[in-house]
Image 1 (cartoon, rainbow, N blue to C red):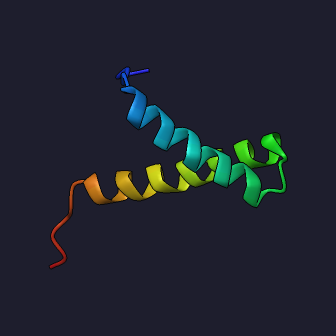
Image 2: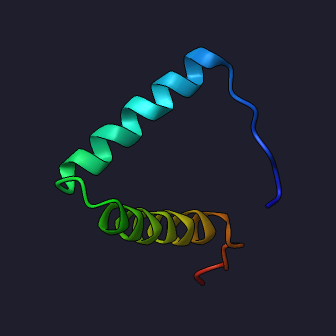
Image 3: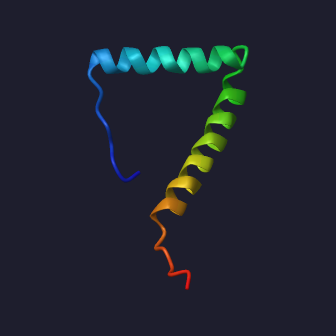
Length: 59
């Protein structure tokens, strides 16, 4: 890990609420939710990498 984030209790509670909703969307299947989250994070990382790649001249 590159960076460790410390959350206060309010932030932790907000994160827990979002996590609970995400798992609920997957009908309580935590493994299915985790797998989807991994895929989503991979897609977002690919998009970030594409945006930060050096641009070539198109002449």
